Amino acid sequence: MKKINFISQVLAVMFFTLMVVIDFFPDIGISMSIGVIGLVIFILLSALSRQKGVPVFTSSRQEFIFKVLRGYTFFRYL
Image 1 (tube, rainbow, N blue to C red):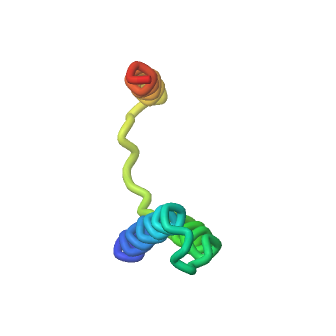
Image 2: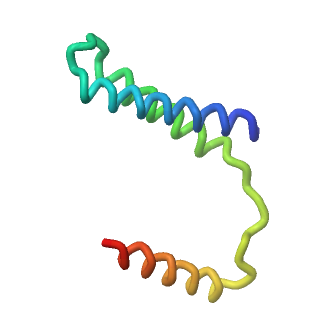
């Protein structure tokens, strides 16, 4: 499953890159729907095949503190 997850993530990035190229160069002759459909398929495949590991946080309090601090650092740069 780990290998399938990695391959699907790589293919999702490739389809996203294809969508950006099509957006900048619309005269290529490739439909945007090909990129969108491929991106959605491989994101779903990546989400379904992801490996579930051991939780990082030992309590819900640690997880809450991490989320608050992560949100603070994100909005600090805006």
